[in-house]
Image (cartoon, rainbow, N blue to C red; front, side):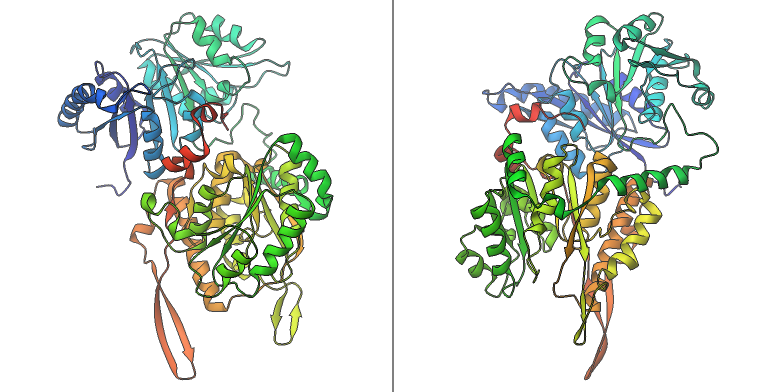
Length: 605
């Protein structure tokens, strides 16, 4: 029996009269042993008691029970969701459970499905997505696969094959700009079912509609849904009655319809891309030292800015950090709207000092405690701080810095205010470390150089240009931060970089030179614990990428050697980061920070 986990499909339906063809279609989308988790959706109108959905729910349960009983592939957790916005509940499940594919009975681009728009669904779903409307597809009709590039190619081909049975597939590429027609020969040869491969230049909507006759279904990549105004997808939907499928791969494929010339190795192309990113997305804090200019940008963009200060027993330095940032960035120049301390149950005077400085203080174990409980760790404090901080842009700075300077903030905010495409900025710096009575100018960052950098280069080379991936100073847009998971402990910085890369791409990440940072360096045993946690985050992300399971079989306790004058022993430490789901999936957070109108206008990433 294979140890490979089954391909997990979450199938969500809005109509309980014809569920069987959907189950069969879901099975054809899987290329390996699979299991289907069925969800029936009952959408109750706003202002109406959810109890009004009881009869529909009962009908759904009868249908789901039959399917789970008759079909071995249907998992026994089949259930019905009754809500004003049932899709929101599904988003919570998708972001907390490891599904490979989300298949949805879709109402089309002009209507909300389960209370969310098409862009909402495409944005918030962490797995592969297949949306299908007008489900009258046949097994003997030819599918038109219309893609503008390679990011969704594999998933698109799989959907087209699932729709068309044994019939051939037409691969169609069209561009609105005049350019050399792409060579689709290699792509069509790699899939025997593709009998025709066509390239065209012209009006995209008209070109697709001209090609549709003779086909029984249309498969499109999600990129068609990203244009402003009335999208190509909406126009084609309005002018055609064929079943339409929209696909969006969780991890966009690097393959493009214009592949690099054979003499360029893939490694060389990637290396060039990282080098270009390093040159274009590495900033210096002094570029943004004109605070009045930053203030003008902030006011023009009408955004608010928050600083979150995570702290645990930092009474020696926390007051200086707060007073420096508050005086320069709030009182002299009102660049920042709030500074908030997020305390992790300090036992010294950290909280009292912060309160005496006149800033709000929250204890992270108390934030959302009734809803989600609490764990120890800096990552937990950062994740929960999203709920209490108010800003559109959020900067986090550690409170153990002894040479605090406003550049630790404006060096991070500057790129975000000046370049709207950026979503996240990491700080880097020289880290002097005290050895005896002397300061070594280039010491520090030991876990970065011995653990994080080798792992990034091995498995996430796109991030190999990040100077200090584990630095504690970074800033990002709320709209991005709320959509990615947070690890609760030492692994938070590693997880954020990987997840932001996969969701928003390398070009959405930048780094800024904050010059010199002086703080209290951890002893080697503390760094060993940090490295242990960081490695687990890398393994967790590689599990997601390759569909394997390692951590469940791994030992999570770490034996540390204690060698003291009167003690020589092994000390066992349990070091495990808990992965918190995207904050956007937490209902109280959405109620506080997002209205229904605001959510509906979020554009697909």
